[in-house]
Length: 462
Image 1 (cartoon, rainbow, N blue to C red):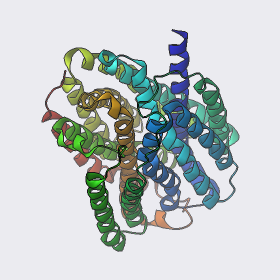
Image 2 (cartoon, rainbow, N blue to C red):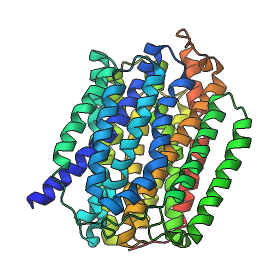
Image 3 (cartoon, rainbow, N blue to C red):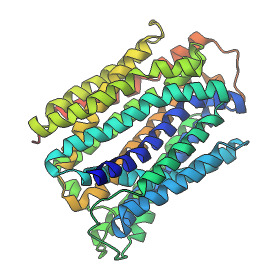
């Protein structure tokens, strides 16, 4: 029992450090933007480069973990993450900050590609939903505490203080992570790494994210799409062709998984859900701080209902999925996500308190849909595929988030072009700012509705 608890704490603290870092950064972005005197289009590259590196390395990290052991790679990831986040907080130039944030992505890939898989390994198969519910609770707890702590730190010590806090949390995670005790990997120490598959997958993801991000941040310069998207398709074709004909015993991911409708529909719904909901995480702090004039600490309070709902709803949804199947929890979660983004369409006529209600529905949606949909996906795979699928699910989340951030930022700049300047105009019209953010949620509402339709048309799995 002691080994189980120490392992759970070791895994949970690593995930907690990840969530705290991301949530606090979202709250700090407006302050970083104002402090360094950089534009909204420039500041978005702080999370974009981090997610770009993380997304590119998730599948390779998972496969390396299958070969050398998940605990070992997980701890190496925590060490890299810890060192990079410490230096990030000391950066004086935006380019240096972005550079070390991207290095932090290397460690993040190793952490995220193993966290969920190790949690599932700790539990019996019949308790998969319970395990995923606990995983969502860890994320929820991190999301609950980080807005309050992060807001206080930013108002009291400045935005650099959040990176010092994350550094301390990560050090504790490394200490407890050394006590993780999970079953040895099936591949053990046999080295047969899929290097070509890694190169093709990295080029596919990088060209896709960079082309979309540059397209939206360059004032809708369509050359980025005309060049980037065809390159992404070419690299994807090369990846699929190579993986089908490869004799490697350890491919990055088995393409046979995509022949399963449960696996395909579950992942597609997951992808659209993250694209549609990431604008809430990214734009809400800007809305509350620049639009409504709130402080960072008050902004953290407005965000709080979301993580609270996620922390409580995740385990409940996991248990319901174990007992009765995942269909109805998934439908409820998808409907809640649709409500959350739809509320933002009325930001111009509602009081600022609407953000709290929107976050509450989003937290409920992410907790219920996240647990149930993940259980739905894992019900279609074998245990020896947990590592690769865990990395794929995380890749879908990170790439969906960054595409959602890029698109939402582009729409805000479309309606508020003065924010694309290198220097921010501090005397902007707050009503126009609120209206621009509200209009940018039209696409998220459409994508969230698609998520609900996909879920409604997916069969139940007990």
